[in-house]
Length: 164
Image (cartoon, rainbow, N blue to C red; front, side, top):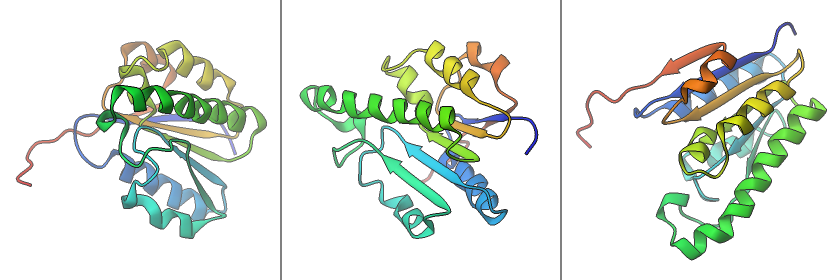
């Protein structure tokens, strides 16, 4: 497949996940296997439930058990979800380590850094697990400076106007 590619969609604008999903659909149309792991959105992120219809070409995983997004949970609920989130991150490491797919999207994984659930170093170790066959796509609102040297393509999505 060529060189590994690490791609980031970040910023305060809307459409980061949609851009990442676009990469997934493109890859799947080329016969590549795709896995999406969503973080911080809860188990009922309805906007992307249609992706389940694209299996087995695109596999979607959500490890969180709560219905709402992580930021909307009570502190007691956040403690329960923390282990589920870490299970999802560990699954991502396993997927990369075993070469289980051609394209891996970690949706809102950068938000885990913002919430001190994982450290920047955890993402760097994840990136360094990659072999020559994988595209890794990360999304979130903030891109830590320390990650920039490890990323091949960075797209910033800013919100300029929102009348909704």
